[in-house]
Length: 314
Image 1 (cartoon, rainbow, N blue to C red):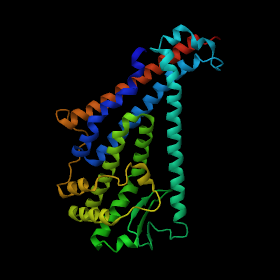
Image 2: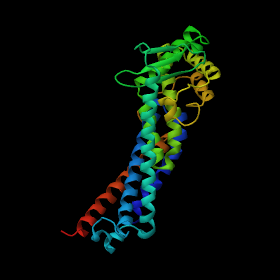
Image 3: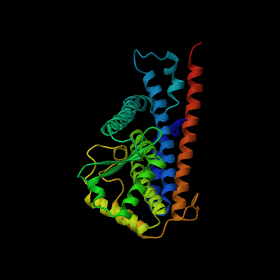
């Protein structure tokens, strides 16, 4: 394996160029799916890398339950600087597992709390809360998600803007954006180098919903006006919702950039950008980095299994 076992830890750096370019040049739907897929692959590969090096480090500790053959020189030679790297991987992997577990636990807790807050309300797709504070959010759950909005926000929007608001929140539910956001959140917990992708996906998911709302309403300017007005008057939901939890920052997606994008022509839907463009070069570079990371992890895993099997006494 050699130094190639460490490649999955640093290859997420290759995805940084596409994070910003994807926000500006790709269709939001394509950008969200691409960035989420790259982040998930690289996060899994870096975790596998930590697990492999941890095996080497744990085998050297006195009193460990692993076979004695796993600490043979042949096994330690598979990982460079095995004494330092192997032992350092133990707390690193524990930190990754703890952070991901805490994220999943918080996701589950927020989801339950959000549904409990709506107990006793009508089981309709749109729930209007008699609250003077202006806010709205999409709450996924079960077979059908729900759009929650307050009378305080509806009173501040024109009828056409209300339709745009509902179309935007329904787009979040239909496309299951909370799953993309949770996936990149877990990826960023597994490897901090993937945090730019998490920020980018939180923006592209909002832009995806904006474009779907504009298509449903038939007016990009109406959606832009509804987004800008809602951002000016909203104070945020009193309960941390799934969309807000998964997206870093107080507001998912910079509103001025979203409004500016809606005032421009609709983005062109492309299945994959050409390699002869700037965004295409970055996209292909990120995809190549993810592929190399996956192949490196698979090669290291197979090699380590073969070495450990040979070192295990029968």
